View 1 (cartoon, rainbow, N blue to C red):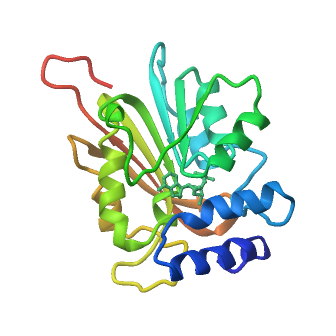
View 2: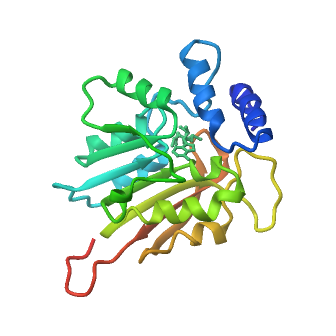
Length: 229
Ligand SMILES: C[S@@+](CC[C@H](N)C(=O)[O-])C[C@H]1O[C@@H](n2cnc3c(N)ncnc32)[C@H](O)[C@@H]1O
């Protein structure tokens, strides 16, 4: 992170990580921002363009389908997903972010909840037809990477799909995060709990077309005899 918008996040992340707390800085950042004293660098006015582009090329038939937005922050992507017709749950570890999303979208149909990807509710296992993970896994240290990837994958229902959007890191490359972008092998490791990679792309970063991001779609086929996604 080098942009001016990243200054507050960098400061709070350094303090939190020095205390061996991989996620405490998010709540501190959102709380400072709510008080007008900090900038949330990923807060945008529009949904993620890479998510929109992905959705627009699908023939989505979402009647009655459920979606989960991981690390939903202030809610732009969750609102977009709900607008596609999904019954949408969106979660974040930061209570201030969850409150902020509800306040920003007072008429929202999204169910915004506080939850921790390191300890997600058991009833979310296999419950969602669409799961959107955009740059949340990469915001947590490598020490918890395998665990959070499995926890994301576990939420996808039979017949469902997972979209992952992330920065790119070379195999073996050392980075001083956050973020700690995903290597190809880390991306491939979402293919657990019956998930299979359907499409893996490197696409231009919407805010910086000179840089690339992963955008990957995983599908979890229904058991033999079931309706396919
Ligand atoms: C880098 S931001 C990305 C926000 C959003 N997904 C986006 O694409 O703009 C990471 C988000 O994940 C949340 N987060 C971090 N660790 C989390 C965890 N363990 N469980 C749930 N949310 C978490 C943070 O509070 C923050 O809102």
